[in-house]
Length: 135
Image (cartoon, rainbow, N blue to C red; front, side, top):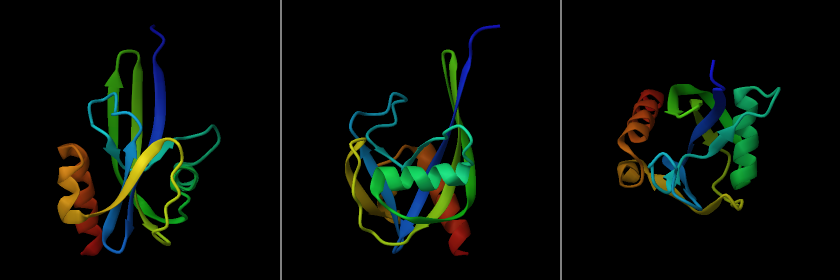
């Protein structure tokens, strides 16, 4: 059998004041998804997905968050490599961002403007999650 690698990642739909946090990558995504993304990253060995999301948000933005719930899953397959991800809904305790060197900018984006920055698949996951939460 080939040497197949798996990567588990978490992403956060982080909401503050009815706006969603987007981060601008240093380089565009290798998956062709552009520069803007939801915050998050890979699990460290022994970590739960919730712990990973809290850690990643603190590392990338300086934010403390309240994780509300897992909201969706996703997978990306490349040659010899597969990423499996969990998207979470989370609430930020404030809107003060201190960026790490992984990103060049951030945006607290109005929900109505998200489609300008994100691919359709990610946009649809966010809208579904936000609409479900606010019902």
